Structure formats: structure tokens, C-alpha cells
Image (cartoon, rainbow, N blue to C red; front, side):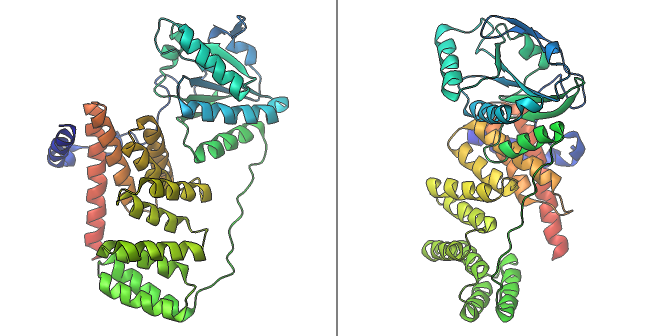
Length: 390
């Protein structure tokens, strides 16, 4: 019934899509309803685990203060707090402080079992920063926490420097670390470019270029023929094997598709695009472990890969790990939006569609409509672009 409902919503959206303003739909993940970047932080006073009453005002003047709202159980909360602990160990002498505000499951306070689990996490992870319990969810409501974890980085004058919603598995550490370093006035290390010694044969490149045009125009037979020519000239041409894998995938030849993807990755273990393509190939054939492993390799190579976050998000959605899926999809949207090159992005459309599906599964019909409407607009843009190119 839920799938039927989503299909119905999609049909309604097609009729309504021309009346929806693209810019009225939020594309940025939100952490709080009542706290935003450049705001003055909302003050509060809570008791820490030792029973001492502490005011946030006592942290005024610190170069960088992280306020993180967390709950149990949440793997993403634990992941983020572990990174915060690493940063705290390294930079507390330079003025970095962390406040972790625990939000109970209900406003009735923390039950004995929940309290035991919370202490177990703190002990197991060796958190040495201050942890507070928001017993009646008063601070949670003051800030309007929308997801877990939600984090505010506060500068020494009490202004919110950065807001972070969720904690993407691969890019989360980099984004958080870079923000903290920036606040502390420490230069962010630059990523070194990968320089490959291999250069494909020029004649093979020409065949590959023709093959790519044929593939993009859905002439898979002609693409295969030109790729075979390229590989005959240069047997170490990894990109040619990868494209041939996609060709065989489109033609339904699973065995040859998988063989060529693997040949490509044996020749070039640094090509995130090929790992992504192979991940999609695996996912679409219900090879879940293979797909997730390939998407994780994409993000290990490039934590800022929108495609990688999108792919990993689809795996979490399939597994019904909705919090993790939403976190990955929102990170994918952030990256896709920041790296627009003027052309419509099909995977950005897919990402909004996936969020719409999740919202439908969670019976959040208004949210589902919004996300699916955005997806429809983006799909139309992609189709229009393809027609204009033709």
C-alpha cells in the first residue's frame, strides 16, 4: 500500500509541478529550528554528570566551542562524539571545548536502563569532555533540535560559526575537523592531487572518445565495437574496461559487465567513478554487500563525492536504516549543490526522489510531497537538457 501511495503522490505532482517554485524548497539539511549560523547562541544552564550546575556562559571567550545534541542508541551520534574527542584531545590547549547535551527518549527523564547505556557509551569511548543531561528536554525544545546528532560550533564572542546536521560516515570527520581548525586559526591541510604515471595511447583515446559518445546516445553495439578497438591497441586502458562494463550492463550481460569492471579496477585502484558505477551495477542486481563495499570505497577515496553519499544512502534506505540514509542523502545534496556546473544533475534528482520515498515510508506525507516535487523538477530539467543537446 505504501508503494501505491507514493506512486499516487508522484502522479499528483506531475500535474502540480509547474506551480511549484524551485527556490521555495529547502536544499540544506537543518539541525535546529531556532538556531542558525551567525546567530548568538541561546544560553542555558544544566547539571553535568557529577551533579554540578554549569552555565554555557562559563565557556565565553573560548576560541571554539562545540555543542552537540545526542541520544542513545545512535551510531552517528557516537561517531561524531568520538571525532570530537579526538579533536578535544589534540586542541583543548588551543581553546577548543566540547559540551555534549544528552536528550532522553521522553520528557519524563532518563530511565535506569537508558542511564546505564549512556554511561556505558561514555566509559567505552573515553569521553572526557563535559556531558549534560537535558532531563525535561527543555534545552532540546529551546534550540528546536531536528535530528541527531545536531551540532553548533560557537566562536569566542558567542556567535554561531557553523551548524551541522547528522554526521555523514565519510565526509563528516573532514567537515568537522576543517571547521574547528578554521576557528582556531590553524591552516587546513590541502589534499594532494593523485598524479598517474600512466597515459593511454592516443589512438586508443580516440576510439574511447567515440565509444563514450555512442554510449551516451544509447548505441551500445557501436560503443562496444569502439571500446574493443581501444583495448586492442592499449590493453592497460582502465577507463575503456570500465565503460565496457557499463555497456555490457546496459545490454544485460551480467558476467561480462562484472568481468570488465573488475579488470578496470585491477588496473586503476584510484578511480572513484568506476567504483561508483560498479556499485550501481551491484545494487541494481540485489548484490547488496558488493554495492555497499564499492560505495564505501568511493568515499574512502573522495569523502566529498556526492555520488558516493547518494549510493551509500540508497543502501541504507534498502536496509531501512532511515536515519543513516537521510544523513547520506542530505550530504549528497549539499555537495551536489556546491558543485553545480550549470547542467542538471540526474543523481541529485534521484537523491530527492529517495528522500521522498523515505518520507512516504515514515508516513510524512507533506515532506514526501515536497521532496518528490523537487525530484520532478530536476528530472524535467535533465530531460529538457537532453532534448536540447540532441
